[in-house]
Structures are given as C-alpha cells and as structure tokens.
Image (tube, rainbow, N blue to C red; front, side):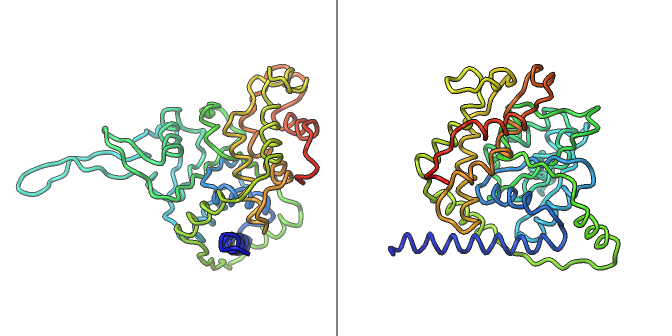
Length: 336
C-alpha cells in the first residue's frame, strides 16, 4: 500500500470517527433526526450550505445551535425580520476618535463574520438583505464601502425557513436558492421519539456537550473529500439525473416536459458528485457509489426544480418529479 493510499485510508477513518462523535453529541439533544444530521454533516465536510425547511417546533434552530456548540467554531445567529438591512448583516463604518482631535472611519464587523452562521427564517427579510448573505456564501467575502473583507474559513451557513405563515414573507428567488447545496426537510417525529423528547425537555437535566472538531480539522476534511475518486459511470449517472430534470433536453421524460418549467442547474450535478464523495467518506468508504448519488438527490434537487401550473393541477410537486426521475433514469449496475 503506497503512502497516498495509506493517508487516504487514515483520513477516511478519521472522518468516519468524527461523524460518529458528532452524532453521539447531537443525540444528547436532538432525537430521531439522524438522516437530517447526515445531510448537514455532508454539507459541512464539502464546504456547502444548507437550507433547512420545516414547520415550527421541530428543532431546526436547536439542531443548528447544538451543532455550533460541539464544533470549535465562532457562531453567530441572525434573526431575519422585514426591517433588517444589508448593513445589519455585513457591518458598517462608523466615525471614531483616533486621538489628537482626529476622526477616522472604522469598519465594525456584522454578525456574518462568523464560521458557523444561523440565518433564522431567511424568507422573512427583503431580497436586498437576502442577497447580502448569499453573496458572502458564494464569494466568501464581504464588500462594504468599496472595500473587501475576507471571511474566515470554514464558513458554514445554515438557514431556516418556515413553509407556513407565508403572508408577509419574501420567498428566495430560484437563482438564490441555487446557492444552497441542500434543501433539508425536517418532518414530524415518530410517537416513540416524540415521547423521548417530551420526557427529556420537561425535566431538569441539561446535557453536557463536548467539542469535537476544530476549524483546521474541518478544512482538512474538506480537502480530503475532494480527493475521493469517482468512477466515470457514477459521475455520468449524476449528470444524466440532473439533465433529465430539464425540459427540452433530448433525454427529458414526458412527465418533465409536462410538469417542469425550469430544471436543475450545473450546481446540482456538482453537489451530487461532491456530496457523494463526502457521504462515502463518512460511511467508511473511499469511493462514490450510485446509491450515494440517489440518497442525496432529493435534498439537492427539490429546491432547484421549478414546476408549472400543469403540475399543480395534477397534484405534483418537485418531490414527485424527483421520485419519478429516480425511477426512470437508468443507473449503472456496476456503480451500486
């Protein structure tokens, strides 16, 4: 076994152990959401960002705050409201005394200067303010008063969105939604899990959380993820899956032509491949399988497929399209 293979195996083992340790800590607070946690960790280890959607009371904010508590990263929270301005996020210049009667403009950093950022209820603020955050997510820097300020990496944004009470909200445009690697949907718990949550949260015991990973370790994991090999047939399957979601393409199924207004972008193909690499590593494998791509497809595609009024009249939505795509697009047997 050569040195590169040995290093890769050691890195994969470290990432698997890290995932298990993070999961163990989160389970002290978060019950029955292992699939959601896996998606969040996959985004973390790829350098992507997550949009987390769910009705109130399903621990969206608690999950993110708990994750921040067990990672050795600077954490900030922004509560998005209709009156929030871009400068409230990025920061602003103020006039300060510098001594000797002189004054100078000094830049005061906003809450975006963090490493893990909770953007709570992002759809409750106007598009101009949303764009200030989304630019930073893409470019990893902030521009204020003509000057550019870099953000410290890793920079991980977890935005929450409430799918109900839509009056007075500002839904993210499709081009901005595309900046999120995953749209993670949190559902209701099973009866047994809800009993566990109710019992734990109505008692007087507070779990003690242990910090698991540093920023440098997360950056090293992100570099390792990009070195994971992927077979051409698996990468081609990811691309074909995304391409089939686009109406007007040679291989678009009939239901896509009927129901879809806009299909997924190139970023979706990249997210499937990169996410597949991270998912393979955190499950102890150093190669990407078709099953990795299929498992990530709903979270990658659901916010990137725009359906039309024919879909609405047929009772279909983006999730319906994704399910049909996974049934329709042939997967290579050797890549499973």
